[in-house]
Amino acid sequence: MASPAFLADFSPTPLTRLFEEDGERASRFAHDLAGIHIDLSKTHLTDSLVEKLDAAPYREALDRLFAGEVVNPTEGRAAEHLAERGTGSPDAVALAAQRHIRMRGLVDAIEAGAFGDVTGILHIGIGGSALGPALLVDALGRTENRFRVEILSNIDGQAVDDALRRLDPATTLVAIASKTFTTAETLRNADAALAWLAEAGVEDPYGRLIALTAAPEKAVEFGIDETRILPFAPSVGGRYSLWSSIGFPAALALGVEAFGQMLEGAAAVDAHVAEAEPGRNVPLLAAMSDILYSRHFGAETRAVFAYDERLRLLPSYLQQLVMESNGKSVATDGAPVDGQTSAILWGGTGTDAQHAVFQLLHQGTHLVPVEFVAVAEGTDEQDPAHHRELLLNAFAQGAALMTGRHADDPHRAYPGNRPSITILLEDLDPASLGALLAFYEHRTFAEAVLLGINPFDQFGVELGKEMARAIDDPEARAAFDPSTRALIERAGL
Ligand code: F6P
Image 1 (cartoon, rainbow, N blue to C red):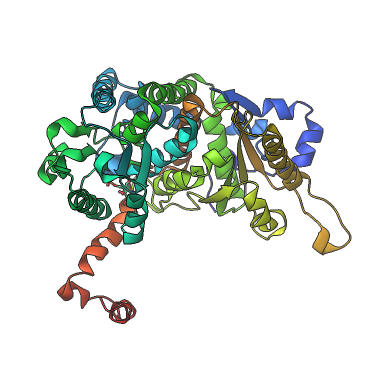
Image 2: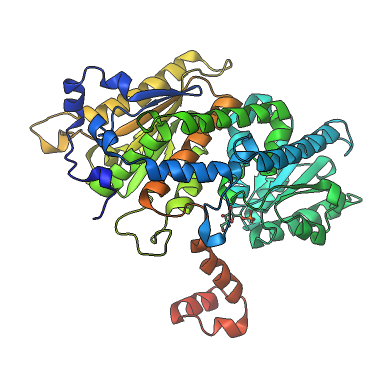
């Protein structure tokens, strides 16, 4: 399997030996980044591996990203999500700032009563237009939430019913979030929301709609007044868009100040990658670890466990960020990639997962690099004893995976030498969550650069979308395979 040059001649040392040989390892391979402690010491990364990295291509790619140059050549675009948090070319930053002012204006108007009594927001979007806002509101909105926010993504009518049941049509605003404003699920659900408002006797259902989009003209065509359209730049990718007006429900529910703090936390990570030496650049080091496990050890997956209920949506957010970005099999120039690209990211919450899937992590035949994401401070409302046990469990699991345990009975033996990364936030607040998500974005970008792939396109989802349209057309349907035709017939469609 071909690998980036830094892995040439690499021969791993068992994790416990790495610690025996280097009394400083625990501190040297742990980093503090914008309120987050990131401990990479229980990975097989070594100084010599890090020294072997030729960081020049990464540095060049990062400079192009920051300068707003085309870094997504297959779509001929820049990737300007960083500008949303004040990083990048002055023009893009100024434009993003103007759009944020517009978003703040709408939040202020809602708070001032321009839409009457508002108690809830129905946010309709899918993929990157839903996962980010859902995570932000779920993570930070438990104590601060000033509005009931329901996120509706799936086209399943059950999802529609579930979301609507929890809202009052008389006092709900509907935010339609779609970068392209063409996504079938989102438009279908928007129609359902309009019907719900009309049936409840809301006088002007269209007057309750807000659009969050990079295609404002399409939102106008849909019937949304220009004053209620919050645009963002087409160069902001869907899975990188929570910093833009796509984050509107979070700005409304948590407050624009909190939203601003989240952007600042992310900007601190941008500043870190801009300035840090390669050997101190934490997202770059984490990406090297990811490649080490996929390319050298052949690990096909990577598991993220949130040891904090407030971060329970983190794994699904990261699945899109990582897998839609780096799940590619051709290089940027179109040549086939020789070797694995993105790991399959999966995960859950601790401690639940310990009693469900950790068996495989400790004794299974797959090597799965694990990531523990925890928060040092619990909330004021919580019983500290619970939080203490939660954290101790996270740390114990990392130790057990690494050290293992010998037993004469093979059923009771633990091989150990299984790697993990521990990410410990001091506190969970808007700034630290922004920093955490920016850390993952930069790590994904660094991995893509080291692998020579484009993380910013997602053509892989297009064929399925096209066929989902064709399958509803009787003529086109005839060209489908016999198995699919039989299924359609059986379901009576
Ligand atoms: O189908 C994938 C995708 O294009 C994602 O990249 C995107 O986040 C999601 O669909 C939603 O797209 P849109 O915001 O245009 O509705």
